[in-house]
Image 1 (tube, one colour):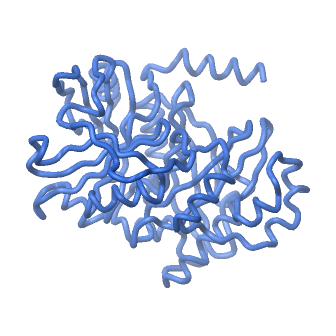
Image 2 (image 1 turned 60 degrees about the vertical axis):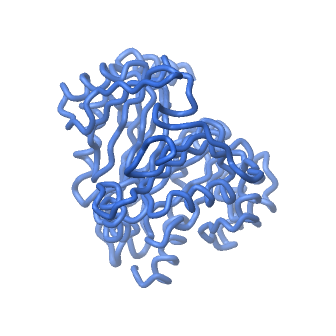
Image 3 (image 1 turned 90 degrees about the vertical axis):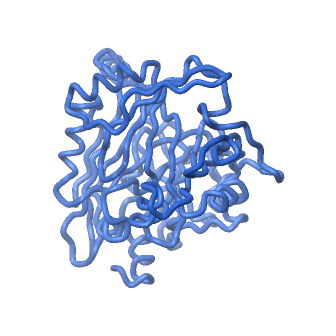
Length: 375
C-alpha cells in the first residue's frame, strides 16, 4: 500500500493539468425532450436546468440532469442544417462533450494547446446574475471534445444561458454516485496515438494495458490501454479492434457511429444489487451472462460480501485484484444504433477494470452482435 501512495503522490506532483473531476457529459440527440424523460423515468436523474427559446437560445434546446455527482446534458438542434443536427445525423445519439472541471480554464487550455492540442473553443467568459463561468475546449478522438469548465465564481443551476428547472413528476434515484470512467473506441492503429495524446498533451499516465490475448474470444478481439490523470479522478480507457475470425464489437461501433467516439460510460454505485434491481424493474436491458459463469465464482474471486444468489439472478459480474473486488454489469446499447452503452460498477477496494470478466463480457456482446447480423 505504501508504494501505491508514493506512486500516486509522484503522479500528482507532475500533474501540470489539475482536474477536479468530470464536470458534465453532453449528448447530441435527436429529441432532447424525450431523451430527458427517459433519463428521469428510467435512470433516476433529476432535471436541474434548461436552455432553449424560453431562455433566449434560438437554435437548440438543452436539458441538464443530475444524480449524485453525475451531470448529463441532452441537446437537440431545431434546424437540420445546424452542426448539432448534422452531428446527430451522422453519428446517431451520442457523446459530443466530455467536460472536465478545472480551477483555471484559460490555463488548462493554454497548457494543452502549447503541447499540441487542437483548439475547439478558445477561452470564453459567460456571465449572468449568478456569476461567471469560463469555458474552453480542445479536440480529442473522432468529433469528441474536452471542455474545461471553470465555475469557482458561479452559483447558478448550471451555466449562464440556462435557467433552473425541475422534473414535473416524481423521480426516484437508482443510487448512481459519480462517473467512474469513460471508454473511447478508436480506429485500428490509432490507440497508441491517442494514448500518447493523453500523455503528452494532458499529462495523463498509462495505468493499464490489455492486449488481444487478454480481451478475446474464439471469434474476435480488441486491445485497450487505460490512461488516468494524476489524482485518478479522470480515467479514459482507449480501445481499438484487433484481428479475429469475425467482426469485433469495436468494429461494429465504428461502422455505426461513423467515427471514433465514446463507447460506454461507467457509473458508480455503492449498492449494485439495489441499483440493478431498480433499473431492471424500469425496463433497462442488460447483457446476458450464462449461468455457467457462476459455477466456480467463489473459487475464482474468493469470498464477497454480497449474496451470490442475488448476484447470479441479476447477472452481475465479479472480479478481484490485489486491492479488493468489484462488481459490474453492462447495459445493451441505449439507442437503436449499437453504439453507446453503460456500465454499472461497484468497487469494493478494487482499482482495476474487471479483466477476469472480459471473456464473458465479450461473448455476451457477440451474442447480441449475432442477433443484429453484425458478427
